[in-house]
Image (cartoon, rainbow, N blue to C red; front, side, top):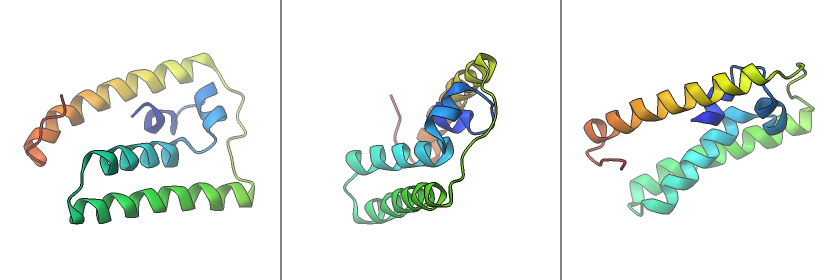
Amino acid sequence: FICLGAFRTRGYLKKWLQHPMSVGIALWSAGHLLSNGRQAAVIFFACFLAYALLDIIVNVAKGKGPTHEPVVSGDVKSVVIGIVAFGFFAWLHQYMVGIPVI
């Protein structure tokens, strides 16, 4: 979630990751693949992982990446957004999927 928060900010994290949204989706899907063995879930999360990795590969090949001057406040915003989003989705996860996160 911190990677997803870094997608909309201008911090050092975005500059370092280059494609933070795709990295966040790849980490999210890989984590769910490791913890879930049902066939439907494996297909679902494997497709997200393939999409995220393909997006990173294509954007690197095109030479796309952030060109901003990084500031620390962007990283602070990324962490705050990530923690708040994680808390919300951790709470919502048990109602949507029926499995508590923690």
